[in-house]
Amino acid sequence: MQKNESGLKVQLSEKGIRLTRQRRLLLDLIEEASDHLHASDLVKFALERGEKIDRATVYRTLGLLKDQGLIEELDLLHLDGPEHHYEAITRKSHIHIGCTKCGKIMEFETDLVANIEDEISCETGFLIRSTRVEVSALCPDCQGKEREKA
Ligand SMILES: [Zn+2]
Ligand SMILES: [Zn+2]
Image 1 (cartoon, protein in one colour):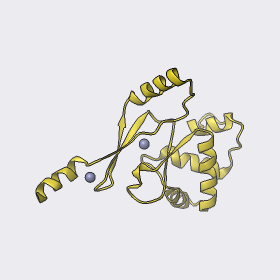
Image 2 (cartoon, protein in one colour; image 1 turned 30 degrees about the horizontal axis):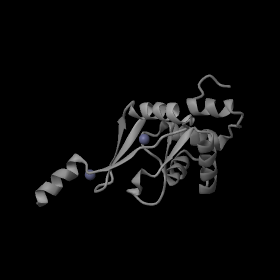
Image 3 (tube, rainbow, N blue to C red; image 1 turned 180 degrees about the vertical axis):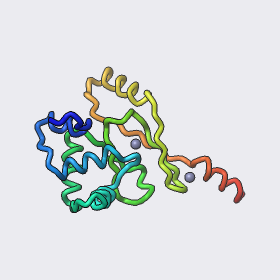
Image 4 (cartoon, protein in one colour; image 1 turned 60 degrees about the vertical axis):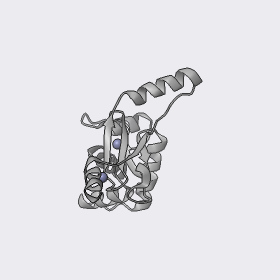
């Protein structure tokens, strides 16, 4: 394996899954993303890099990565529609807070999630694979606007 392979690619090949050109590109895009991605974002970003990948391939690859526990599928309260978002699980444990008014999503890093997982594992014997916490809220900006109107 090449030295400069990134986390997701290393993890995937360690699981014995072949890194095709398209998988490689999608993994790069997911890892480089600073935001939560839609499947359609991935099609668009791939195209910007001169690669044509159809939605079906993107969905198949996302499904594969999800099954392997490498990415998380989020609905983020469906604030911007029915599509799901994806992010790499390699990132630090965080919860998502969504503003129900403007749709802004904030990530809040906390060890609380890990603590909850420990507690659940200890008390139930379940082996936790992932935990998703999504908080529906009103952001400071929108709270300001609500006050102006009142
Ligand atoms: Zn807001
Ligand atoms: Zn996130």
